[in-house]
Length: 547
Image (cartoon, rainbow, N blue to C red; front, side, top):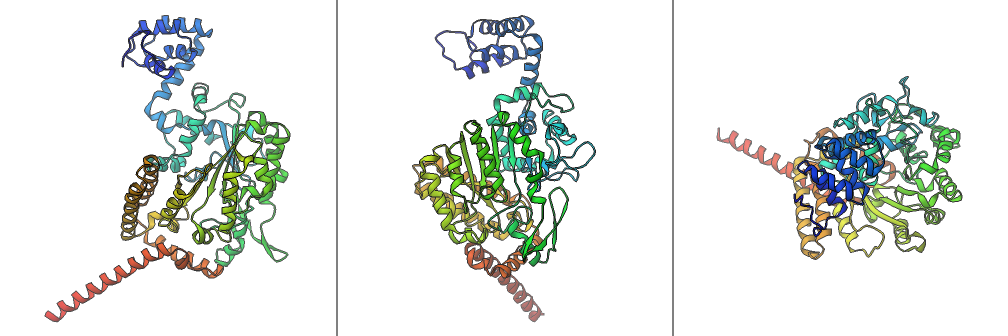
């Protein structure tokens, strides 16, 4: 690095910060920059150099009008942030975020689908070991044992297994939720590091919840193949018809009974938790410190409580400061919600679409593709939605691992302006019988070959759009990496057929017709096995004759 202080050499603020924090930067340079630089961030950076002297500290303190405690906190924060282990483990969300399950229990993050038995799905427990729920004062429990433990581990550069989904996505080349939100709140990280106690405790006043992930129950308009009764009330009847019983467990371990009320399968009270929840009051009373909401479900856009919260923010002049994020199936968005969105600072929509046309309708029964297309057009053209962006977010499973290619090609050919032309892919982990890791090796090889031909073709066809081609290729290679990451489980692969055939019978559908690309691959695989078996038998027979 060039440390020459020559006025003819122009350096940006970031370049100057990089220079003065570099361990080889001469002390005399630190003193000059601290005394004369007009950017306070650069001045403070002089004190962050690992070789900075007391003389440097004194100049910085005088220029910034701070004391040595400030300098020490800043140096501690910088030291941790600069550590490679810290960069790989740290996430802002345990400091500024909380999430609800559809039944009103509270967890740290929706990505926490793994973990040990005492923290399944990131489930938060109070000091007495009971689950933290919407009935509790969230501020009293921001330092719940697992919350503190996770913060402490992250500051030590350690990775907890409960965050495995993010680690896996990053390893597969997918931008994780951790990375996304570290970028959003990058300016807050230094404070998080320097003002957290050794045991992981934080102050509510210093670190209010800025970002809420809210599931106001399981009300939904569809019953996706990979879903279940926890996240869709449309699943109750099929759950029973599959022989899975007339009850099911929530993510925090409660057992819920499916009852019959006026001829309809229902679960009473549990998913209407907002009606009696202090959390609703908390959300209303703390809007001035809340910057961002993420809504999912169920289907959030048809949930009355969701619409009430949006209207409350609009009526109280808070909407213009708040960013909304969504996971929506796009098949039933009320017109009133489109109108509400126009009042907010930003609206970022993750459109949970796992296929096109008949593929979509099969995977997300009984949604209709025509309704999705209407809503796509409105998002892309409505003058009221200039604050809105959207992305196709596909959950890649055995059901659509081949048809993902159709989606990428189709999306590229559309003339969308607000809708991202790149597909966002997240690999499905559960249920295991839908996980592409459990495809037989021969089918994995066939899928890989199809992907490679497709990658070559898009680079040929759209050679002038290198950025898009490279992004599409990275997406596909991340899917392949996940698929090949583990050996297949033959029992889970066979369970795929059992579940699909059983649901097909209930819903009067046929996956072999609706997912023909996949069916063709499986047919070829089964035919190959049969040919191999026959060859073995023929050889054995000939050997027997020769004897």
